[in-house]
Image (cartoon, rainbow, N blue to C red; front, side):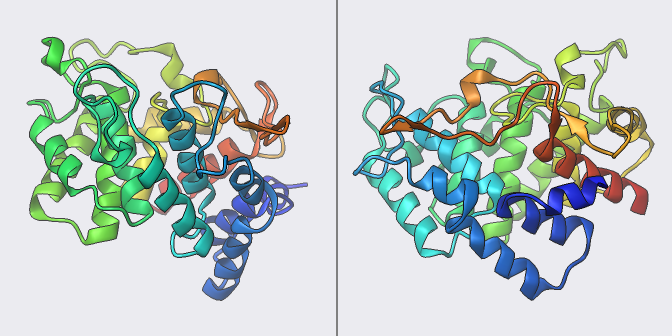
Length: 312
């Protein structure tokens, strides 16, 4: 079975994206398949794991984190934000989830944001995707972009250089906000500078020495959470409509090198802290993705990145 057929023989969350990004299926067929995310498979299973107040719970007091992780996963699945299921989910989290961190943010609603740009970038991505106003957080992020074009959660502690991890989270959030609102010249400039931050470093390497920044950048995870890797960076550039240039060659070759005989890619370096481990009545959410085994999520993202790169 080819990798594309393998993706099409899958959950609606994977299938509709493969139809759109890899087979150029008619828009009405893609939309019909996407609608199934809310009522079948992984999407409806994840939605069913909420408490009565609409939050996801792992047995700890900080229910904002499992709730945000669950919403991020539903965004990755492509849950239609205009659907009744999505509108209900986002409203309940907006009304009931508050930050449990210490300091001035304790007890504030999650969609007012927090202090760290890596967190705020993810909150912006969720708010913009699901139709919640996050303009205040966007303005804060614009003011926190660093001289090199990146962002860094350690800026408040004296860091003067961007971080790949923080930068990719902010870029994804600002791009989602631009899609939802039409953007602004300020957001467009920030996106351009942040994208150039990645490109100047060839997605993997130090600007000063050309050395590999972190071996973890070469390992493709899912869910990625706050962690950067080269596949995540490339998939962002594809989604942003950036034209591939020679600075991406090494990262694209890395993606190609990981394909097996059928064209599938494995799951690597899973981040347990980013998994949705919500439990309700002893039911656990599991998409059957295992480290070292072929991953539908990594394969989907890699194939559409390679298709985008080939079009250049």
